[in-house]
Amino acid sequence: MSENLSLKLKDEVFEKTEKIVEKLDTSRNAYINEAVDFYNKLMDRKLKKAMMVKESAAVYRTSLDVLKEFEQLEDELPE
Image (tube, rainbow, N blue to C red; front, top):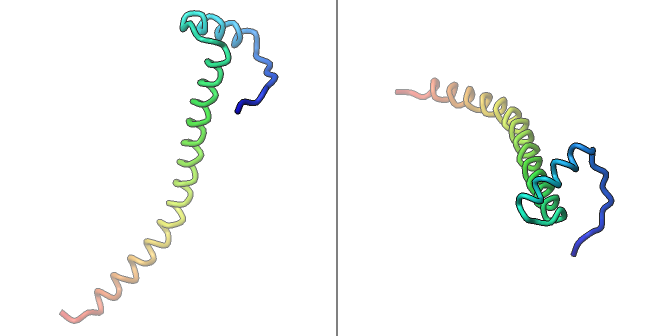
């Protein structure tokens, strides 16, 4: 299924799009769909990366605490 969308592009963006669409011999609709799909994937990756960085920082602190506890236990073990 497809959705209708009214879209206003800056003149320079529209003109560049028209030139590229003509060179690619594709429809404007197909070109814009592909561009939006690509951009969505790019933004999804950026959002996932930001989430992973944030979660890694939170886990890092906890991991250091656990590591210190293990080191203390190891120091207490008889040889």
